[in-house]
Image (cartoon, rainbow, N blue to C red; front, side, top):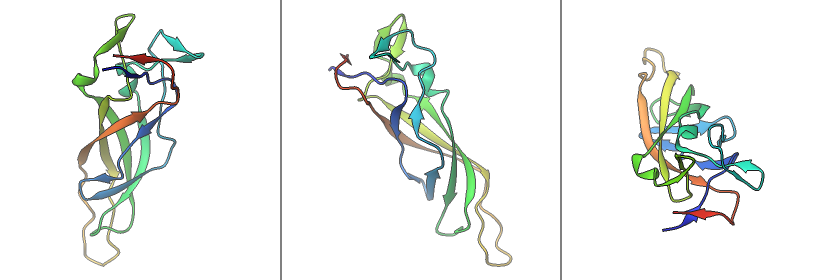
Length: 139
């Protein structure tokens, strides 16, 4: 099935819930095309390796830990997403998904005395792409 090709600075659709954590990304959730060699309307098309270059700062809270902690959201490409190729590299398409991974760096806390902070952990949930161009499709 054909779908729109993802290009430089297209939007990442990230969930706000990662397990019990409500995560707020504090930077623009965009994918930057750095590795592909195909251009669409003067923008580089995104390839699978561009997904792994995304690192977004984020804060989080949970019901038990209302004082925010912080961490980083990174992405992992789903192997099923690698279906279209250009110059031997898998293109990213709107229908493709990725795994958003939130790594807690500074645990959230509870202001109640004696309550230890949240544990440092890694949380995963699926995300998707929102293309900004509407004329080039691939399958």
